[in-house]
Image: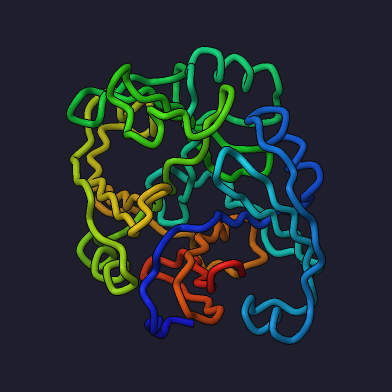
Length: 286
C-alpha cells in the first residue's frame, strides 16, 4: 500500500470519513454545517476488499459543501470507534477546516444542533497575526471526527474565498490538517506525491492553547498544496512529538479519515503515510 505513485497528484479531490451510521451522520452535517447530499451507492467486490483491506462491502454517501466533497463510508463489518480521550496533538488527529462567512452566526447554528463536543475552550478563538489572524473553532462531530470552523480576517482571505467560492454561511473546505511526528519526513513523503510547501508558521501562545485545548502548545504548521491549491494539506508537528493512535488504523475504524487525491492517467492506489494517515489516489472522475 505504500509504493510511490507513477503520476503526479493534481488536486485533493475529496475527504473520506468512516462512519458507524452514515444517514445519521449525514443528517448532522446537513443541519449543522450546510452540507447537501449528492449521491449514494453500494461498494463491494474483490477489488474493493483489496483496496480497503476490509472483508465485505460498504455503503457510500457523498456530501457536498461548496465545491468540495465528503464521502461517508459505512462498512458492513464495523471497526473500532474513535479513540476516547485522543488529543489534538496525537498522531491519530486529522480534521478538515470549513470556511464560514460569519463565525458568530456559524457558531450559533452549530450550538443550536447539539450532538457534537468542543475541542476548543471558550468558543471561537482569534489567533495572532503570526498564526494568520484567523478566527477558528475546533470540535468533534457526534462520532468523534475532529472538525474546524475557520473565518479569515476582513480583506485577508485567500482569493478563492474572497470570491465566495460557495454560497451562504458555510463556503467550503479550505484544508485538511494532520498531526505528524516529524515535519521533514512528512514533507518528503508528500513532495514525492507532487505536493509543494506553500507556507510555514510556528504557532504557540494562549490562543493556540485555547484552540487545541493543550497546555503550552508549540506546533510547526506546514502547508502543502497541489497544482490546484484548494483544498490543501497542513502538517501539524507538535513539540515535543506526542503519542499515536495506539495501534494501526484499519479503514473500517472511525478514526481512519482518508484524503482522496486525483492524478492524471493513474489507476486507483491506496497508501498510508509515515504517521498512519490513509490516502487514496485515483484517476480523474473516479
